[in-house]
Picture 1: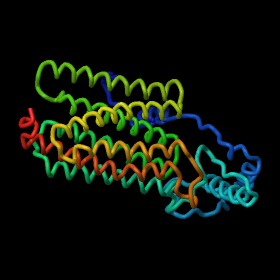
Picture 2: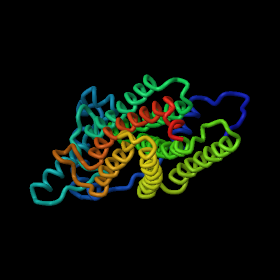
Picture 3: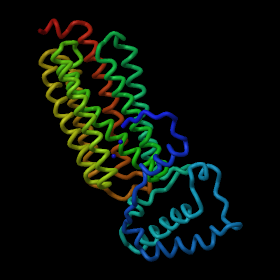
Picture 4: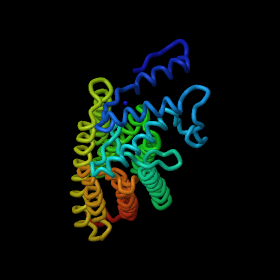
Length: 331
């Protein structure tokens, strides 16, 4: 799980790149597999035999395009050699560099997570296109729904990139984009539930205060991760807490909406929340990847596709009901 200064001249691209690299710099903690003597010996021998200048083993183009180098190839190969030996000896599979030893596909480190991340990306693209086609352009909540889709699209794009190739920069962009998406989910929820978009002086003041609060909250979140401690446990806990608050509000609203409308679609948020919580529980029971491909994290990504589609369908029904005057009829 990110001041402005007026300058006489624009900063150079080199300076910008240097600042970005500094921002995304971080340390990497070792896993059990990294510390195994047999793994380190395997990598060392592989590098000596295959990575010498002038006689290095040729790497296929599609992998070189994804920045696979000879040392990285040795690391990947040795992970699977050690894993196969451990399985043959009846020993448990262990992680390397904080990840399970996945079988890559077309150079992708975690192909299942990449594909399922793209599935969520498609769900947001499909959902917002459908919503914009079926809800009048004058509907006042559309800007917030577009921003919700944009945050989701960005989060799942960076997720796919990160799972394709795990670097410090791709990992942090994934975490920060995911955090922004989760926090935006909480941000727009009270705007819809309490109609903070309506042009009254009191609501405008509340909206400004709420917007400022969420921006500060996100800035503090990023500042802590980057400036204090890159804490995986904290990042997960922060996203879970924000998500739980948002989900609780939608469950309350869903029940209230059903009392108003007596329509089955009013319960869709409850169904979506239940599905998301069920698949999120997979993260608590992490296990080695099935067939070297499907781990708990990838299945969690798979499980969020259907609730996302259901969520956009609810937003469409909810918006159409209001546009048709249903709320006025029930008031």
